[in-house]
Length: 76
Image 1 (cartoon, rainbow, N blue to C red):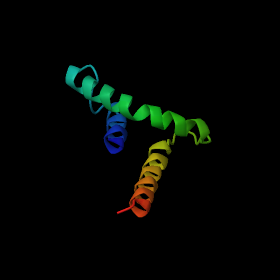
Image 2: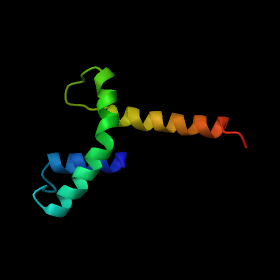
Image 3: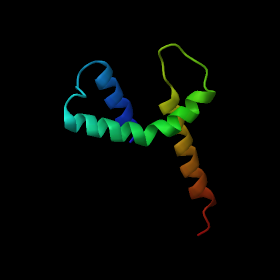
């Protein structure tokens, strides 16, 4: 869902897809509501890098680290 959020955000910013379409708006709104709470927490601690937003990358790295940690320490 993070990949979808990044791609949709770029497509909306470059006017490739239009959020005035009801279906596009519903999908975009759902994706943003699902990812923004986590991304906002990351953006709070990251320095401003101009127009580059690296918070999705940090979120994906954190999720990968967490999944590997759970798999490694999960008692079988």
